[in-house]
Length: 364
Image (cartoon, rainbow, N blue to C red; front, side, top):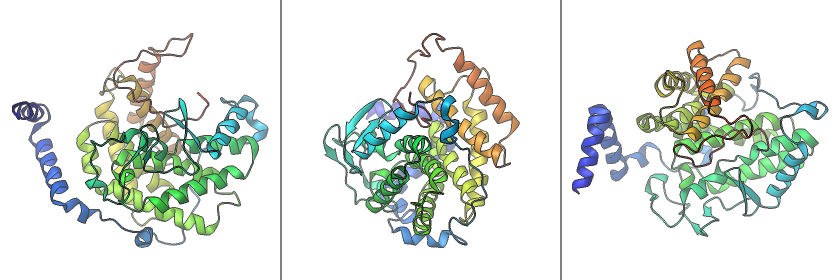
C-alpha cells in the first residue's frame, strides 16, 4: 500500500493535478460501469446513422499505389516472397511480429492466444476484461492488427490473383462476425483499433476495384470503419493522457478515417481533431535533436511509420500536414539514421522493443 502511495505521489509531482484528476475520473468510470453506457455493446447496424449518402460512392480521395506488375522490376521487395507469404496465410499461418510464423487457422480464432493456448472472453464489454490473465494480450492482438493485409496487397500487385482480395474480405467479414462493437478483447485498446484501421484502409484502397469488392461488402465495411472510429473518438482522452505513441496512432486513426471516408457524418470532426493531435504530438514527443521522448528506438521507428504514412496520404489529397510537423519528422529521421550500421542496417537495442512493425511494405 505504501509503495502505491509513493508511486501515486511521484506521478502527481511529475504529471500534475490535471492529469491526476483525469486518471482518477477515468478509473471511476471504469469501476462504476459509466464507460459501458458511453460506449455500449451493440451491433454493426447501429452505426448506419453515422453514414450519409451511399457508402463507397465518394472515392475521390487519392491513395498511394504500390504499382502494377509491369513496373515491379525495381520494387523494394521480392514479389515471389510476397506471394509465398500470402499463400502461407491462406493455409492458416500468420507471421507474428514480422518474424515468426505461427500455425493458426484461416480465418484465425480472433480471441485465442495460440502461443499459450488460452482464450479471453469474447462476449464481455471491453472494459470488463482483465489485463492479468493467463493469455498474453499481445499474442491475441497481433493477428488482430491485420499486418498480413500488406502482404496480401503485395501478392495481388505481383500476381493479379483474385484469391488475395477475396482473402482480405473473408478475414474482415469473419473478424466483424466475431467482434461486434465494443465487445471482447479486440476493442480494449484504441491503438490496436487504429493499427487495424491503418491496415484495413490500405487493403481496401488497393482491392476496391477487384470483383470481390461488391457494393454489399463496401457498405458493410463502411459500418465497420464507422464503429471503430467512434470507439477511438469517444476514448481519445485516455490516449492523450498516456503521452505516448498511443496518442499518435489513435490520432492517426481518426485522421485517416476522416480523410478517406468522407461519407461518414462525423468525418470532418475526425479529420480536424486527428490533425490537431498529430500536429501537437509531433511538437511534444519529437525532441529538438530529433530523438523520441519514449527513449526507445523501436517506438521511434513506430511513430515515424505513422507520420510518414500520414504525410504521404495528406500530400496526395492536397490536405497536407504542416511544414513544422514535416520538419520535425525529417529531423527525427536524420537522428535515427545516424544510429544505423551502414553495413548491416541494424541498430542498437535501446529501450522498449515489442517488435511492432506497423507499415511492412517489404519482406524485411
